[in-house]
Length: 344
Ligand SMILES: O=C(O)CCC(=O)C(=O)O
Ligand SMILES: [Fe+2]
Image (cartoon, rainbow, N blue to C red; front, side):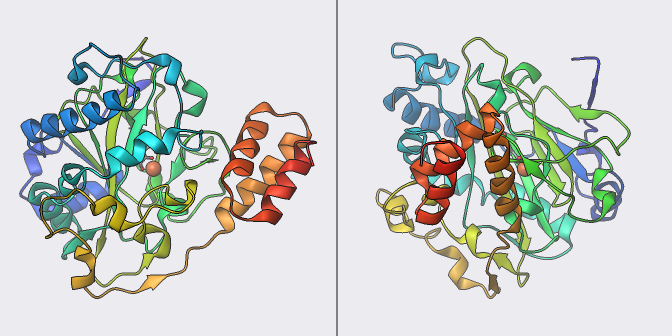
């Protein structure tokens, strides 16, 4: 492992001890478990996802889909043209949604929370091409993106082996103790917002992840992805969020992921079209919890910064604004982006 990176603490020894789990989470902001989820089920999910990726042309034909060998000519990421064409095929898989409801994960988060929890309706898969490293997920706190309440926990899990070079998740232990939402600034990469971490001491922690491994962390925990520096392998992972039933959930978490990137928006009915069973369709309607309008200030600030940076010739900001122009349904926003690009 890179000498700057330290290994995550493995908490399997405390798996059934709620008090000890809560102590570790309060102290370090994360809990990491080897094989929390059934590795065989994870590998079945890998086959489902990678088969969809191969059918979509992202994995080389005539290779074993389980190997996840990317066609690097198809490289793209969230926000790029064509990303959602294939992503939403993966997103329609019943097995992908079911994986967020497995008792081993839901019960573990309930133990940590000390109360019953549900996964957000919006589940997320990350499909990360190799060598597209400027689009790596930047350093951030999840609260800016998912909101609702601080009592929201993220579970990140690789779908298959994820050694460090494939670009798994890294955390800054103890950083959640900052106990507030930090200022985030424009960046490329998933979420589009980055936070500076100069004020924090200590090393980034990660590990060579194996199927079934699960990293759970707090909404204010600082984390980022590592770049996928392999020659040709896709990084496939899940990041799902869980909330204590009764706590508010942000409106944006009630829809399929990246629905706003397509026109017309993709609906749950679209996602459910080929499902074999009904038990997970609209499951959240059986529970009471308030749905709150999201706070757009974080993304608005990122947009304003991108305008300014693009005017000053920053290529990342220009690339971002071209994506905005292609996807936004807000005419005024598109116009401002075009102006900053000098294309109005
Ligand atoms: O997997 C990634 O690249 C981003 C994941 C992330 O930020 C999260 O799980 O909260
Ligand atoms: Fe995150």
